[in-house]
Structures are given as structure tokens and as C-alpha cells.
Image (cartoon, rainbow, N blue to C red; front, side, top):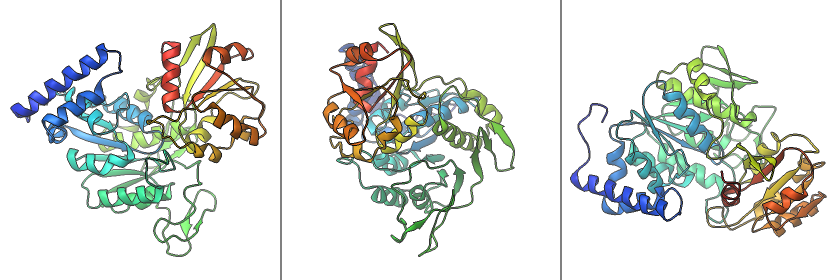
Length: 412
């Protein structure tokens, strides 16, 4: 294990073995990757297993409402320039899934781990990370997750006194409030397209002033910190003012912002921006996101959007009208069962697109589109939507479980 003595006790080794066996059974039964059930079994046998598995690794944690899976992948690619990496690349981002991922990384030097926002403090306590990347905070899964200000407070308490280098988005006031309790922060100007969760000051509750890209509270003086890294158009600016070109196969401004944060993280471990950004070009899709697939003799681009901020970013990168758009929304446990967030999405941005609606909650979405004066057709399934769609590549936008349903249907 990277030249270190084996940190695993006999009990821990038994837990790892049992977890892998449970995961294999789950895969054989066609129930997914098995990483979650495998991790649960392993942690049941050794509750300290996550901490034991992390002892020989330089751990990097990535948390956010949006973009954490993609950013985790970009950081992992960049750090492979410096040594072997283990990562929860499929997005199982709670302790069980993270434990499963680390159990497969005995030869790794780095662990790049996506963490669900609710679990960040606990996972950081267990894994003693060298670096934590915080990208954004916005409303999501209203029935499950805390209100955004409460989540920021939870992060702030968990990060207080942390030895980790915290790479944080200077443009999101909630992230800045959360990261400010940490003694070692590297600020990145990564932008904030969705501002609707950041109009009140997280420090005092006053009204936030937002002139241009700047922000500050006129009541208590809480303000945007000076960034040392920045996204500027198609370049990343490093702390020396050098501009490094971003060449990604992933679309949209949001992924350039993810690349800027990823380059800052890579630099913490000695990987230069030029090397890090070149390696990020290798990423074509992330767990099926952005994939273009063939289905019924048509090209479909699969896009994940699971909350208002994510939908806003996704609308900014789809092809212009009259490109057909399929929207699919579920409200299962993994999505959050509350669909009231649909009313926070500006669907007028789809004006001019032929729209086709499906998913468990297609009627909720239909009502929202009706109010937004959009013309659309409600469909029973993907096959019907594709048959009805006019010629050209189809943009398919879905929330979490709807996205997984669509991937299975197209064989992706």
C-alpha cells in the first residue's frame, strides 16, 4: 500500500472481503454496481473501516449541489499525472459507496471522492483529507436536504480548524460563508449563474448587494474574497496571472468552471495547470452525462439536470431551436419526492423548441410548461417521444432516476 505497512486489521480485511462479495451478488442479480450494499455490509462488520482505508491515501473531497460528479472525474484525471488514483467515479457519494470505492484502491496514492453535501463533515472527519473542493450550494431535494443556509452552517462547523486546503468558489456567498471557518482557503472565481439562493447574507441575514460579478452585505460587511484562481472566458488564470487554455470535450460554461476548480486542486499536489488541463480533455462523458447515443436511428444527447440551478445551466448548453427537446422527471427517493422546485425553473428558455414530456411526474411538468406558455406533447415513453420528434439531434434532459431509466432504455 504505497510503501506503507498494511493498516487493515483482520476484522477490516474480513469486512472488505464481505463487502466485495455482497457487491458481486448485487451485480449478478442485475441490481446495479453493488457499491452501496457492499459498503453497508463492510461498515456493519467494521464501523471504522472508512477511516482505516483512507490512512495511506492523500484524500481529496469534492462537494456541491451541482457538478460534483464531473469535477471529481476531472480532478482524478489531472492527478493521474502524479500517481495512481482511486475514485467513486459512478457517483455513490454517501459513506457506504465511498467505503466501497476506497476498498478497491489498495495501490492508489490519491483518493478523489465525491461527497453528498449532508455527509461532508462526517466523511472529512473519517478520512482526514488533504484538500476539499466546495463548488456551490443551492436548493435541491427539498424533502431530504436542509435549507441552503443550514447546509452552509453545517459545512462551516465541520470545516472549522480543518488542516485541509479548501478550494472554494468565491462567487457563491454560501460557499464563502461555509469555507471562511477554515484557516487555509484557496479562492477560485468560478462564477455563479443561479443566484436565487444567495440574496440574503448568510452571516447576518441582511440583503446582499450584487453589482456585476461582485457581492457584499451592506449591513455586516461580509463580502466576496479576492480570488487567486479564476475562470476567464476559455482560460484558467493561475495565482501568477498566467492564462492556461481550457480544451474540454464536455460542453458548457459550467464545465469550464469545474475545470478551473479542478486545476486549482491539482496544483495543491504539484500538478501544473497545463498538464492538468491537458489530461481533462480525455473526459468525454461522466457516468453517461453528455453522451450522444444512437436510438431508433436518431442521435440523442443525454443531459442530467436535477434542480433549478442544474436546469438553468443545461438550458444554456443545448443546441438552439428548432432542436427537439425531451424532458423527463421522476420523484422517487433518490430524486426527492417534492417536485415544487419545477416552479423555480425558467422554462421560457425553451421557447421555439419542440418539447416532449415523459417520466413518473410528467403531468406535474406539463402543468409547469403550460403556465410558462410552452407548447409540448406528453408522451408515454421515450420511444413515443423519439417517434414524434422532428428531424435532428434530440436533447434529452432528465433528473436523476429518470436519467437512469433512459440510460437503461437506450442501452447506455
